[in-house]
Length: 141
Figure 1 (spheres, rainbow, N blue to C red):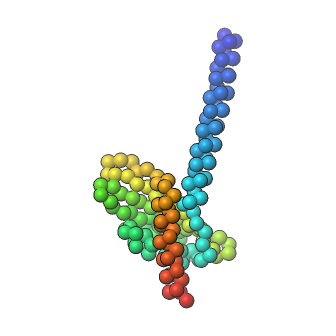
Figure 2 (figure 1 turned 45 degrees about the horizontal axis):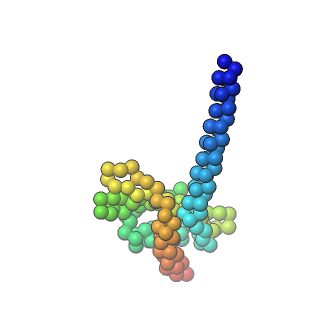
Figure 3 (figure 1 turned 180 degrees about the horizontal axis):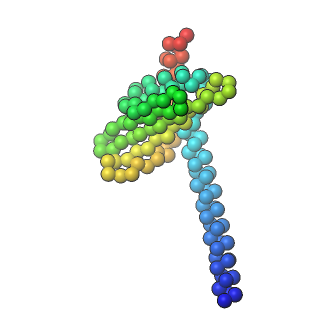
């Protein structure tokens, strides 16, 4: 009985170690993904939100919901047999600068959508957003 109990305790400790290591790897991957999903801007939340809607429309997305109070914009793009959905969250800091995070999902009609983790997808979006911000900023001045 003592050997069995010792076996259970040792096996449990080893099992916990594997789970902790796996959690650390997943946390590192999530942090890496978040770095290319997020960008900081020197402009107000309102400027970034308007430019974001324009950028999404330029990329062929249909705006599903835009809520300035919460700073969220959700848009969908229909592709051949698939759908891409993107959600933007825009926050302001105490210096009237903005932080925007994009989260895209892709899936076919009969699949559960999967998160897009390709940095190039987000990089392309932020390039279009940068241009839209330039035009939005010009309209304000």
